[in-house]
Length: 298
Image 1 (cartoon, one colour):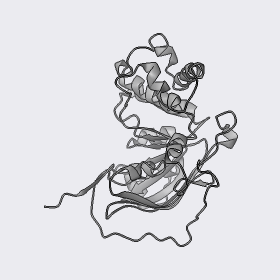
Image 2 (cartoon, rainbow, N blue to C red):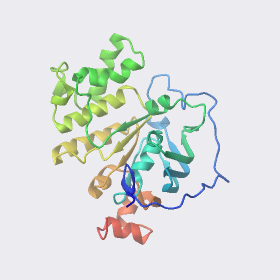
Image 3 (cartoon, helix red, strand yellow):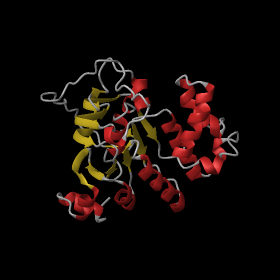
């Protein structure tokens, strides 16, 4: 018996490999090895935020063709939601946006992913720089278990070579940005894993924003949280989009309706429809979208 191939979204049905079409795909290349130079103040303004442009994205797990020709524009300083049933490929697309997909043995991606005007898959691009510019918040809170609250937030900052005085300032700023400072300011030396689930997730968000990314990816960030903690994360997302471009994968239709400015519906590895969130939920243009958001399947 053959075991079905596995991807981040669950089991995938094997299909014959399909050669990606390269004709007509933009081939922009950055002039420097870093994908996008950081602004002078380290943070984009709302008027000059950062976008991600995806054209003809195909993703594979070995011979399994998981993502098929996805093209989508993620607008700066907005929240873009990605919805669809389990196994539809939305988490795979998310991981292609900061090149985490290729960390899976046998996985690869083709097509074009631009951070502003720079191709993050260009040969000369530093993958570490890509992942610093496009941060990730995972489904389950993952604070470093042996580190204090302070050290959890400071970990990435220290790797970037920040001075001690700067680190203290950045940790406080990041915890404030994650809405956590007032709750933890008197116990920064205590273990991060001693916080509640919702606090741990906000700690992970603080750790992400401490390195001053340009885009934040969120893979079902509230799926392991209770309703009160979920509400706090959603309120935080609204606040963070004034400084960051945010892309969120969620199975929660109500959450997508509450937090996303635009929403894409994925099915069987394809982007079926992408529009304003209001349109997707009230007047979708594809019958499959209507059936999904109305609960007829999924």
